[in-house]
Length: 151
Image (cartoon, rainbow, N blue to C red; front, top):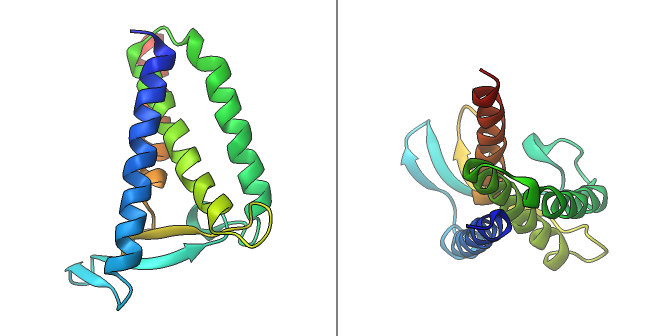
């Protein structure tokens, strides 16, 4: 199968899942958090104007431009993906970048300054969403694939 089609299919699936879960979270968590495991995991709405771990708070427009650059870069390199794993990984990163970019675009007053909706809140880690998870897993798969091919 064509690597671009694989990456695109995975990316579209991630965007749909990400946006549906954010929509659900806005509705279901409006009255407060849902505790899954006491003192370990809860679902709680937060709005992040920065990057992962709330770094660069207020840097939404720059982060939005970075996300656009990542999307363009992925489309440029995915055609050269010689392994299905790489195409899937690039699709995960693509979908995650687009999912969070949509928040910056459609939840904004100005250009790309919208806040990303995060709602999975482990007590031991930063609050995140499906798009963040997809980006993380995609990067790990890219690195693992590259390491496995080197050995």
